[in-house]
Image 1: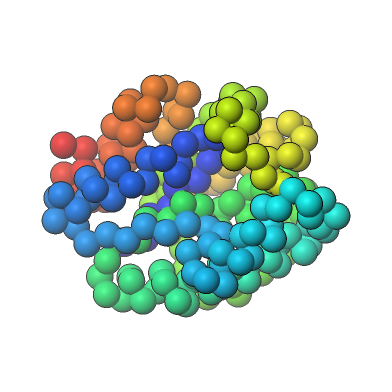
Image 2 (image 1 turned 180 degrees about the vertical axis):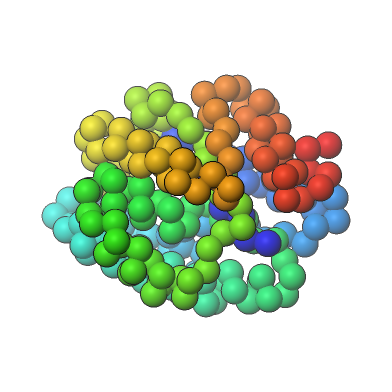
Length: 207
């Protein structure tokens, strides 16, 4: 089972994943958590390049290809082997981030992006994707307070608004795969809502 968490900056994905892993393990599930970009030695090196605030000259096409390079590596090195071993893989971001950020955010042709993504992932699609939806300005304020500001955070508010709108459009186009959680709620409520979303495919998760 392949499950991904998506959302705009500051939506809280990363903080929720360890507790979801603990919950799933307590209920007898074999689960592994990872993140994008990253999750492998090669991917973490690419993540540093993508995140570094010094790399302001990076072209959107360069950004796209770096993300896909990291993604291809994690799919082959981590995600596919774990899935083949009947594990649940829980991933902090995946291919939908590219559609939202580089497609809607940078306004890159979506059909071209999907072809590149399909090549990088070898066609691997999540069984369930949970969107932690949040007002853009609130999310960016959270990131600043947490002192986690990176190169992508520094894009304009308008860019991030297009990203959020892109996510919501993706939900409308593929509602059977997506669940939306209001990330403006308090942390405990968001965690409970994520577990309810997981329960749709993994019985017992919301208990």
